[in-house]
Length: 233
Image (cartoon, rainbow, N blue to C red; front, side, top):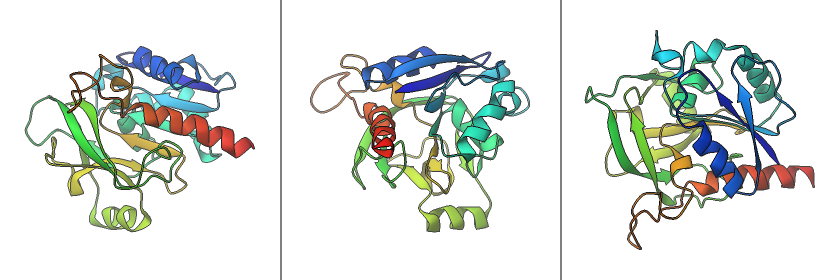
């Protein structure tokens, strides 16, 4: 399975996302923000970083990059799309997922290994998780506070569009402890923590078993590969 990972000016984690796809058994395809060609990929990842320097609002300029026209069209047609951190901000700015993002309520950049609970395992990116499973995923952001008006919060809660929620500590003041959301169809998911940093022994978060042994992020990438294979069967 070919999974496209888009590089924007200021992207930091595209190589990590490409490696995560490879470790999950897929074929990563490097895509460029200025292109209009998705090169036949079957899923897309918008990686973390500081696209276009986070000018105006984080992710706002990137949401209008040339390739995003193709991403938006593909997402509306059902292609799986994952936005990680800055990529989540892009998805929100492009109106592919609900909500928006503001400055962390602590006023500073936050870096921590973050415990999450899986609220919805019925999306293209979460099928390998168990409902209610607790996982640990690295988090690093300055503008990670998820916000939305009361009607939107009620709608996404009622629809089951909250995919992940912070557990123990809310690191950025996100409403309802929301760490990730999906669109109504479940093919588009955005989350603030970085699953691509928890896919390989020796490089993930610490666990009770050993230091740097956390691999919870790998399930994001195996989920989309398996769900796509099953959809073709």
